[in-house]
Length: 255
Ligand code: 5RP
Image (cartoon, rainbow, N blue to C red; front, side, top):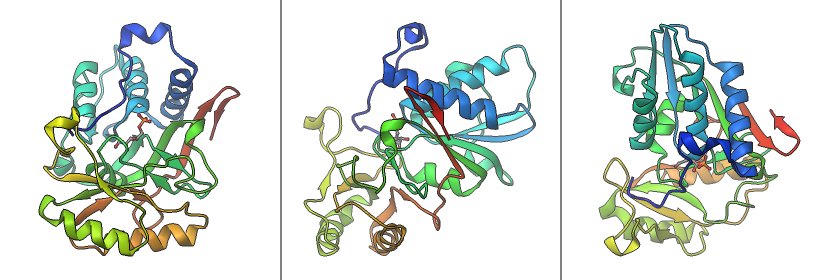
């Protein structure tokens, strides 16, 4: 997508990691070590700066080994990561059955493992990969863990919206109680809105924190019901929330 995205360090800079980067790396490495095997099958690769370390670890574990694993990217960024790592890519539409395991980042995760995703502008293909995966694993630094979604991630729920539907969707979001929903700017902002890999816009819809699992479900269903919303960034029980999340932090990795 043409959205502003936080930079991830190149492989050569990995020796001087900040503590947040070290936390992301610890989470990603632990998740891969626990759930990746070179067995024939398919592995989904999500988006974001933490997923960089997922691919980095898989690359390390794959050196000198022949493998029939097909890696399913969720967008331009993960395609580039996989290409640079020399890993075999398979498009989601070419996967015949289920994906064995998918690894992805998140913008916020609550105690039930419901997630908000889409901070980098990718969520549709990520959700399609998640629902087609036998095991879906989230990797993040511990700042992403919170007691209620939208407590720490204050930008709101990211939504992928069909461009012609934007005015209607914004007014529906206001009626649902969203305070100041907006079309996200692209990077650079002067060139217009953020355009997803699928040619749609991203709308960020702030809501008050979702203090119960019931509130998460209710909002997810309401957002899905708005005509013109292609997909929303709540990954919950019905849409597919992760089986497991790995959070890196000063005290090690919590899972
Ligand atoms: C992209 C996403 C990312 O997975 C999410 O933003 C987390 O990214 P990061 O690992 O860089 O914090 O959903 O749209």
